[in-house]
Structure formats: C-alpha cells, structure tokens
Length: 446
Image (cartoon, rainbow, N blue to C red):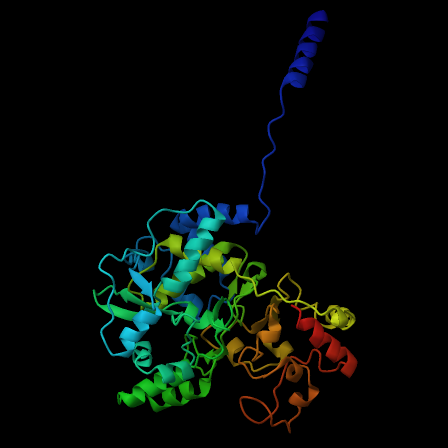
C-alpha cells in the first residue's frame, strides 16, 4: 500500500512540476497572419490549388469555370506547363509618352531588370509593396490600340487614357514581350485606377475609360475587317463598361471599384467566384493574367499572390461628415439598417448572391453561359457615392435615381442606356422623401 501511495505522490509532484505546453496560436481568419499562412498553402502543391479552384467556382458549368477546370493545376498538363514570365517593363512616364506621341518605336533601358527580383517577401508589407508593382507594371498583354492612342493625345484623353499631374500615363507600360519585341502594354491600373486632381487613386474604377470606342476607332482608321455585329456591340459599351465574359452574349458590365474585397465572400457581379480563402483571389489573378496574355505564359505565383494581397489592402479615400449633417446621417443609418442591411451585410456593405429572379434586374449576365450563376451578389457600398453608374450593367446614373420609383415605370425615358423602365432592385424606392434623403446622406459617408 505504501509503495502505491509513493508512486501516486511522485506522479502528482511530477505533473505539478511539468510546465504546460504553450498554447498553439491559431491566426484569426482574414488577419494578416492568417493570410501569410494561407500563402504557404498556395505555393505548396498543385493538388492544394486544384482543390481551392474547385471550391471557388460557384457554377462549374459556365464557360469561365470549365476553361479553368480544364487547364489549371493539373500538374503534368495544361497551364502548369506554360513558361513562367517575369517581364522587364517600365511605366509610361511623361518623357516616354512624348516619345511615343512622335511615333517613335518604344524602347526599354538596356539595363532594365525584371519586375521581380526572385526574393519571396516574408511580411504583409513586403507582399503589398510587390503587389503594387504588379498592379502598375505587369503587362496583361501588348495593346496595339493603346500604341495608336498615344500618338493622338487628345483622342486618348477623350477615351479615358488619363494622365497624372506629372504627365505619366497610369495603366500603360513599355515592356519586352515574350517574342523579343518591345511593345506598349496595359496593366490592371488601366481599368482599376483613376486620376483625381492630378493624383492617382488606385482601386477606383476608371469610369472614363471607353475601350469600345478606342477599338472601333482604331479599326476604322486602319480599315480592319471586323464583324459589324462586334462593332455595334463595342460602340454601345460607352465609358466605364465592357463585355469581358467568355460567351457570345451581349452583357457588358461596369468596371467595378476594388474596395473591400477582403470582406467579400463572392467575387464578380454574378458571384462567379466564392472566396472562402485568399487562394480564390490569387487563383483568379493568376488565371486572369494567363488568359489575358493569350495563354502563352503564366506569371510567377509569387506575383499573383502579391497582387491579391495588394488588392486586399485597398481602401477608399476617407470621408468627413459635417457636424450639422450628423443627425440626418444618423437617421439614414437607421433607414439602412431597416431596409438594406439584410442584403448588404458584411464589413464592406456587400453580401451574398441573390437570385436574379428576386432582384429583378437585367438577367442576361446572371443567366449567361460565360460567368452566369443565376444570381447577382450584393455589391460592396464603400465609396458608393462616387460609384455611378449603378447596377451591374451601369443602367442607373445616380443614387437618387436608384431610389426613385419613377425609374420602374414603363413610361420612364431618362435612363442612361435608353428609354424604358430600369427594372429591378426595388429596395428603397418605397421610402418617404425624408427617409430617402437621410439614406442618401448616410450612403455618402461610406
């Protein structure tokens, strides 16, 4: 008996004397630490990326999904076998733009190094800094239409090829193409950055960019044989819209802002991509760069990841509320909570997809073969005051018009895309004048 008690006492003393193992710290989802941890999964193996791709595709049967399922993360075939391209490129400065305006051939400094030095960042700040360079300098493809536009500065300005206060042209680069030629190319910034008071605002949609008019004009001047139906369609896009889907349907969409994507769980207007992990956005960036470059090369995955981390870092310019307007803003916040928050429910005031039949707006994108899911996601409302035109296809000119019940009537003639009712999204159209005014005041603060 004494021996058993001695053994028990020794065990108790030993247990009390042993320090507890340190608790494993699990990063909170969507924190910087968690994103860095997820990055290691993305850089891991093709099976991990393949599983992430499959989990991210809301409708695996649309063309967007089928193309990626047939080409991405297959290991021994498909896009994994494309050469990795780390380009030499330089942003178009005022001096370089002046050279191109004179019709001279684009040139690169002979000592221009590749965009990435091959060193993988270890901190979020490092990834964001690299991603900023990718956003501004990685060529999505060579763009002969831009080369033409730069020789005609007034025309280029008219179609939204903007310049900053120092004369540089954001969204355009001169780069060494994979075939050895030096060309003018476009980057993410051509659509998702704009110039305000001479300064570049990265993340804001370039609503002046009229890519359709640029293309049509180039083809007319050069007597290019183009399908008349394609010419008609591009001519109808107008500033800030383009048809980028993979099908033959006519469903142009507005260029979106990039605010609040870290809080969004569905990406693209039709919610084509479910974002349960940052791998979804990184794969989106990687495959977009592959596809836009005609599937000839793929970017280093470090650059796709860096681009995703940079996009997550984007926030709209801060807004201030005048003290005398505070009561109306507070009333508008209550109206928003009662009438809008159910759909616009996340930190970016966006939310999950809603069936196109429920929201009632033009269904062509939601039901189309390119990226259709049968739904439209509730878009983020950060900086929504500056986000016109509204609805996925840009049919509504202002927030006041969006909340105006008159636009739903058959006799409506003031729509920016032509006469007739602007159907769908009836939320807010039944408010009293007082509540509508208060809601507009609140939305202007986001």
